[in-house]
Image (tube, rainbow, N blue to C red; front, side, top):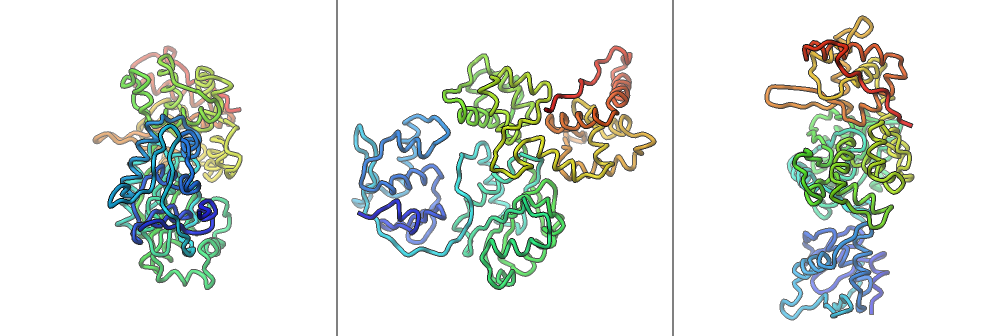
Length: 487
């Protein structure tokens, strides 16, 4: 019997009319890539690793869903879908058989085939993608008609996860493959062409790309934004069959660029949430639960937790990084304790992903990185806007935060820049346009405002403005909440 485990690591493996490309995560039928869900593909790989032997449902569920608790019925659904794709039982063909009371066995004969050229460098999927299926499909659709698509959004919103999900879906669609270029740690834009050439294994430099049909994914393009824009324009002009997907906190400004804003995970209004099942339908809550279970086995949302869980996800704006970092504290603080800390601006959330670059290890670090790239005027405007608890109009912003030291013209320019860098969001309803700071960004900016010594002054301006709006006495208005604890 062929050693399937070794084949999956070192060779392609064939059975019947199928070829499984382990490294590329593709199943082909007579050289034609098949559309197969990620879970079904994982199940197939595990069964092939143990070809000829019975694999229990428990082993399959642990291998395929390492961070989640699933029912046996879920496994059966995926096995059935996999059998349909393989045509199990048609014309006498048998691939996966069920052994009652024991599990499943892969029974087809495996054949080694020569290793094909490597056609991607995408990392393996460690955790499932939550709540992004429609967005991934939208990105894929845009890439079919646009040559340069940039996913833009604030720190931690999940741009990289979304880009990798789309790239995984497109494996096998480009003759020269799908390639991830990690720009996150690059500080010198002159090094970018060399990074691309080394990533793609181009011995003669970027000139080799002229005839390539490939998808390049430039991840975290903002550190070298101008250099990235110049290179993208150069590549698209020189390689007519090249497609480029970029993730960035702000647009590149490339000539053929199409922008796709990335929203947070879904957090519907609380009045739409009446039960555990309904709140678990929110993708933000699903991620919170998955991350909590990774640290606390058996974690579940109870009826009495519905409002608390919803409020936690709302305060975190559905930002995946924020949810992941906050969930790490549930085992020590509990849901109510975490909610209380968030109410006091518990933003640093230091227990992050140690393997991530520094600016993604905590939400505070991610915001600090963006803040450091702003001009002094832009930093001042961001700080002052933090006095607005909710969304606000442009006129209100100019009235409250502008003064002799910060004239309206400078304020207008800074607001445009904050919008471009995803630190400020735009809300358009009909003909009404309003602005809003995400809760997490506002907590960060409010801390900076307090440190600047201007909090009291801006608080008084805000109260006077709200008094005029409401027609109330200034003394009757609540003050802006005190500077949040970000430590």
